[in-house]
Image (cartoon, rainbow, N blue to C red):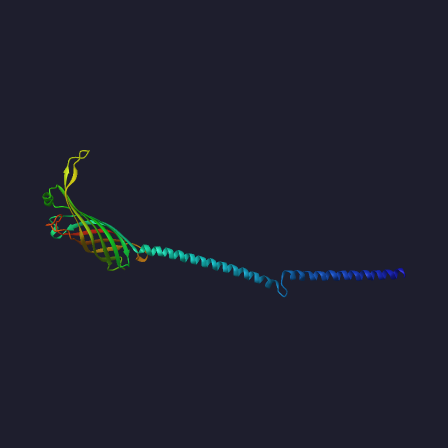
Amino acid sequence: MSSPRWMSLLRRACFISGLAILVSVSASAQSSPSTTATTQFAPGESSSSAFQPGFDDGLSGATALRDAAASLGSDGGAAGGQDYGGHHHFFQGLAFEGGAGFNAPVGNDTPYITWGGNFTGGGGLRFSKRFTLLGEFQFIDDKLPGAFIAAGGGQLGNAHIISLTADPVIDLFPQWANSVYVTGGGGYYHKSTNFNVQECCDFEGYPVTVTANSITSNQGGFNLGMGFSHRLGGVNGDGQMKLFAEARYVYIHTPPITQTNGLGTTELIPVTFGVRF
């Protein structure tokens, strides 16, 4: 074979080899993305569809988490609300009062007792805005007329009355800020009438008051009265605290004067100012 002919064949072989290498590289470059895509995405799915289920799952999980948290919060809030509401209603059902004032004698016992002061305190149950049942303690301190003190052999004197009674209170206009109520009840009364004298002296040289004689008795009694109340504050005017002023007629069945420790029945009109809530 001549040299020109051999060179021509060599050039053709080189050309064909280069063309084959170029085609192989091109095919490899075109197949690489397909292989990567196959690795990352399921067959027949685009990139957007491949990521969508995972994204949806994430949203569903977040939504479920938020729903669970909201449910837990609402349950806890409801439980807390019920607990607070239970205490709130419990305390709403309780009632308390305190007051003080003066009292005047009436009836046949005016020769044996005169004016004085009183203190009242109590607590109970509020069944509704209209009806409350109270247990009341009252202490009455009254003076004695001068003639009666002298007849009893004293220089000073007083009458003390301690009572424990059950007394319903009925509000006639419970929706009004200013209202009128009626009350009354009965129970136990202890009365002591004391005749005192002054003797000399204490360790500092001052006269000492000593009880020379005392008349005591334990008996039943009752009271009837009416009062005015003014409700304080509250949301939408539903406050429970009220100022009140009332007057009652008190009848105590103390022993008649013909009996030991008897001065006849006791009748008083205590006037009391206070707060009830």
